[in-house]
Length: 106
Image: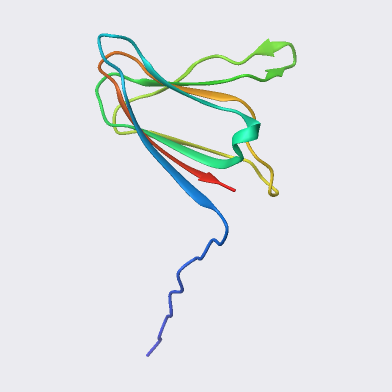
């Protein structure tokens, strides 16, 4: 008989950010994250038929960041390694879009 102990992972000193972004006829609802926010990991889940949008601000090899779409029932997770925080990223829920955002701050 094999006994397996599953220990919970404990993250001390980090705060969890949660937000639902809902785009309406009045326009997109947007969340702008900058390095000063101290976000190390962020996940975005789309729960609507209208895709959400994620856009970075970095330029690599002379190419500017472009919009990446997150379609229904799909998610995207972005993480910084080595204790660093993410740079600028914009998450947008256009009209008829609902996004669930969860981030690790700290």
